[in-house]
Image 1: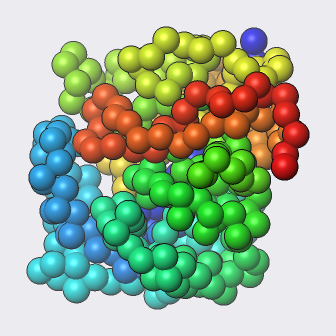
Image 2: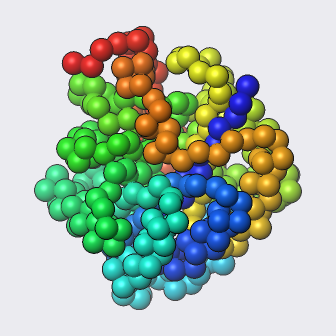
Image 3: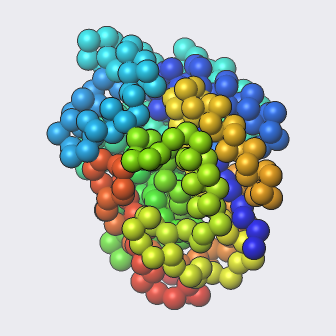
Length: 326
């Protein structure tokens, strides 16, 4: 069975924007890969992520991933001891280059840390204002409106799903899960296709017992041959939609795979090519699916190995995959 792999790039910080994105654009140009980029556009408040120290496992993760060397000390102080710099406005060329290079580009957030840490407490009007600000700046830089969104930290509420629905996006990639689906909010099936991340992220795997960079590459390549599951702890489900291929979505970060782990990431892509993996972008996936054949699934909160806190997970279908939209 053919394996298709979509590379989803999250750009969270100013350093990732300035340094990681150009590195990844050059890598994708060399390897002939079209990826999906999601840009944080407003202030870099990375230092305020210190709030996550109260979450079980967060400090351990910071040590495992060597956060100071990965993100840089300045980044870790932005929004606290150092002013929060704007990411995209003063540095528009990176987003512009990604669009001109033909990559699929969309919105990550206006303020990444604010969304990831405070989403359930943000008033609906404030959430919409921030999102509109991100969409406006994206259009100003890219020359077209955004057509997609990926929620920071896979944090989702029913309000955020409905806000995205009103934008008429081609798709969103807000969850971890198995396959493309239509989300259900308050018993109503929404029309914006969700394409979830299926593979564990590098920061979830780094520092695990017996793990090295070399073994990580082999482990990822082995995962590609398995039908996606919501987490490593779950049994691999049978695909619920007719397909002649396995689709995986791998989220990488401009701050990690675009910087200190760039060589490891390139080695992984080379291994994929050698094994016949076919690369795709998320907008191509969204255009190829038939919404009336997608499962209707709730979006649930859950935990994943190697990740602190909870994330949005694709729930089990509430009706058979063959259905009609209301």
